[in-house]
Amino acid sequence: MILFKKTSDLTKYLKTIHGKGISTGFVPTMGALHAGHLSLIENSKEKTSVTIASIFINPTQFNDPADFDKYPVTLEKDILALEKAGCDVLFLPSVQEIYPRGTADLPHFNLGYLETILEGKHRPGHFQGVCQVMSRLLEIVMPATLFLGRKDYQQCMVIRKLISLKEWKISLDIIPTLREPSGLAMSSRNMRLSEMDKEKASGVYNALQYLKDEIRPGDLTGYILKAAAMIKNAGFEKTDYVSIAERDSLQPVTHWNGEMVLVGLVAAYINGVRLIDNITLR
Ligand code: AMP
Image 1 (spheres, rainbow, N blue to C red):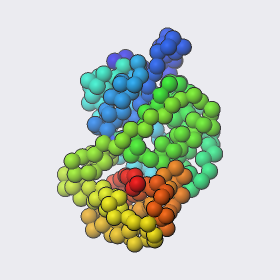
Image 2 (cartoon, rainbow, N blue to C red; image 1 turned 90 degrees about the vertical axis):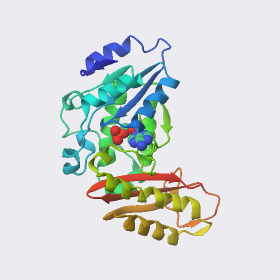
Image 3 (tube, rainbow, N blue to C red; image 1 turned 120 degrees about the horizontal axis):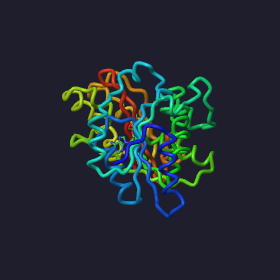
Image 4 (cartoon, rainbow, N blue to C red; image 1 turned 180 degrees about the vertical axis):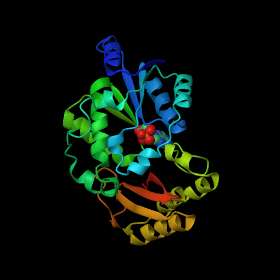
């Protein structure tokens, strides 16, 4: 695996492969890698010729500074894991490399409705930060295919919108969520949980699975209330949202005609750690 810290060095390297019929796959991450991240690498390796990963904890997407400070860092382990997974290139930029003119005056992206709901509503500015870092990373790497995890469902929609706003010819490949045997979605933030909290945290998956198994056409309010109660009873101290929404628009659905494809989405806190998850309901 080749490791680049400087944008100019990565750009020089990419010039030697771009335009030569060599397909590139890109897996952006914030490190603290787990099997979910590595499944994105595996997918990229299967489907493209050169796999590029990045590790960059983007300060501009943390609406809560304490969350940024506590974000887990396991760099040496990550490098070994990427090498073992057969990743070809790792981009490990500093904040200065990504934002050479600082972070005070970064562009604003018109995300419309997407930024007003769910994660957008509960984490003001978060998706602007996601677009700021992704626009820089994609400008630098300009991969044929970008690999993202479905676990961050709304983020995938935001990045799809960014690619369309920029008119870039980048395909998106969205990879299913890898879970612990308990159903808990793998996440770097799980490292901040005790084993007991991890067990409790599978309550989110159980609530989503309940929605998937039980919902029937008609009024959905009762199902949402029951799922929220399941999460609370599992030991979560606060729930930002339990939502059932239309798969493509994320418009909330409270009365279901039985035809529309729905997704259930949750964000909740356990022991101060905010977890998100989602599941397709039909
Ligand atoms: P992060 O390091 O949290 O920014 O995540 C980097 C990428 O890995 C994003 O595209 C995530 O959606 C994806 N990812 C995170 N957790 C999982 C998981 N459990 N399964 C599959 N992909 C994941």
